[in-house]
Length: 351
Ligand code: SAM
Image (cartoon, rainbow, N blue to C red; front, side, top):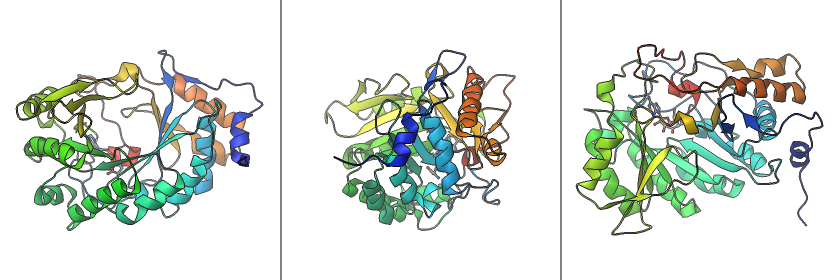
């Protein structure tokens, strides 16, 4: 029989009598944690960064991230997504994944372990990450055309690296590999149809994400958003789309397969701007410097790492997380007169 690592046992047996379920005051159960493990990024995507400033926030030691993540897992988190910044820049990434892969939830299940990456360093890391126990991989790719892609990332040679990374992920057995694409009107919105063909040809899941007002440059306007409705109409005009059922109740994407190639390729649209899904939100975020954000658009952060630095016990951390989650916002207010852009942009929150 396999031996159970010490960390696994600890998660299942916190003796403080606190709930092992994260419930907010709007009746939502929180099961999905996104952790930014570095604020550094090696790309300067036009819809995300200014290109003039680097990391703005600290990153923690591996031991600190693991202790904080463990407190969340003990409270019912089932899915952990490592992000950034660019998570593949973190040298100990495979060790972090390997440790998390050994844990079990209080219900005795393995964690659903995911990474969102720009794919630049993926070619050599895909297999080690798979071996370490990573379950899902999402690669951000905002054009299938090389020159448009490099105009978005502002990094020469990035297209070949990312394509190589995607192929390596497929060879390593990640199935499906998901691609995130943010469309900006007048910049890469001509890529919609090509991406649909790409999804079929390469048997990939492509997720179009509506551009949100979370860019460092504060250039977002409603006119720059390419809507779900437009994307579906444009792909339907060239390929036979077939709606697919959501994978989970808190699924953020509207999913479509292709009726002439069932099971091969998929497109989905994540529409936080034109069709918000806050009512089904199951997410919470931890920034690279250890602050809890209960919504992408939060105007308030809960400094969990400070509690730890000041000597909080595991039980204190769990209590702090429970209280933060209770205060999760009902919804975001994009497009409304009272919308207040958060002080952190996407790259510094962890998408
Ligand atoms: N560096 C990694 C990457 O490129 O995937 C992880 C961090 S990145 C901030 C996470 C995701 O956020 C990416 O898929 C990116 O496309 C998305 N993103 C960044 N800024 C965004 C914005 N303003 N609106 C919508 N999505 C955005």
